[in-house]
Image (cartoon, rainbow, N blue to C red):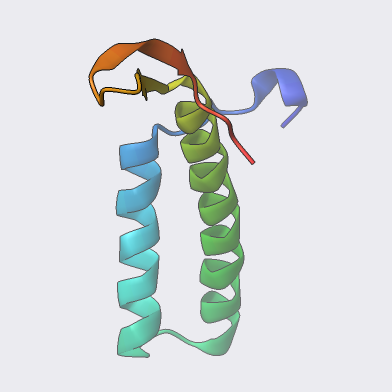
Length: 81
């Protein structure tokens, strides 16, 4: 499969559901070693994907800027570090 034919990235929710299924299967211990390794590798890919989506979402969040009196005076971009 070429890069152009690559399947679209799953949504955060879809990736988390698949990751939860992988964790459950590995915790039960009912899969053979080769399958466990493949599941673990897929889990790592999904974890990185979810981390990237979360970082992207955090970068879009705005924080409320408070004035000296504690009242909200506007919004500012979130500092992502």
